[in-house]
Length: 408
Image 1 (tube, one colour):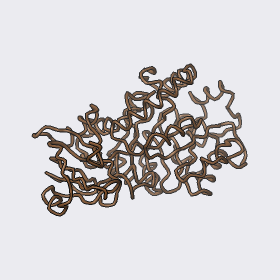
Image 2 (cartoon, helix red, strand yellow):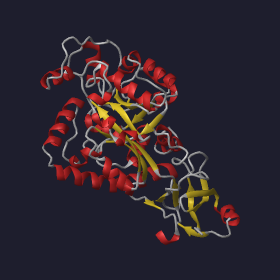
Image 3 (cartoon, one colour):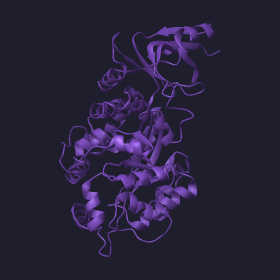
């Protein structure tokens, strides 16, 4: 019979309930049995073996809703920029100059880093498929967004005609979906084709949205950095008529929004945009440290919360972030907005991420029946729990807890 293990710590953070002082989590194999005050859990589980982890916090594994593993070999090679366009050119140039074997090694290393920082579920974005086999071997749960680009692509042919991967076996998996890169790199027709494929297959769509001022300028004037880039790449369409509206409103006109669509970044949104996304139940995935690195800006978390926009967290890639540690995103948000409760920030990186990927029945909180994936953050006896938890996690000091005594 699979043994019952009781993990006890100074604090337990269930996410769906308040912090539990001197708490415990009872697990049996791949299932949580009970969460509560340690004395009560031990009394009700006499068959269990207690592992006392001391001062610190037990919390659920994290959910990283935006990663580009294929850029992992660029860690430390693309310096911070003052403008997203400059970062984009530098990152793509560095990527093309990187040998294939280095790209592979970078992805392997990044997956190990994700595990070490407490990630149990992630959303990978790829436009090559190179990371798919590595993810399957990683032991991590994942959702795969195959990213479609093509400002020059016209017509309403099936998506498979230009992106054959959508007719291949991997695309049959429920965790495989189509993503549109961004309003400046995807034609109106291609946006409609991506949305049609996801609807026909019951998948959740995704897009990079309102990441930079240059994106707003492009949609309002048809000019600026992104027009110049498209011209250089021979992708510009002379008959493109700028919609003269925000990115969120533009995709509303194209019929792209569905409930649970992921909109990554969402920095340059106004009040009307936030109201629209909240009404459509579009989930905005925040990547604050990446946004600072690329010069894009910083998300207005208080305004998004007030508007009721569903949210989640991501790290983006190692070309725009120092690491793939989601605690770093929580710490960045805490330092910018210290009045926002720590419980809210943890939920963004756990339960809300699981909900974004349709996996909340398994991940994101400590509740009976869920997959353990327990993470422990050691803190001092006089710790201020939330800020010290984020600092501890961001410093890479957390560890995964074993599901059986033998693992420990």
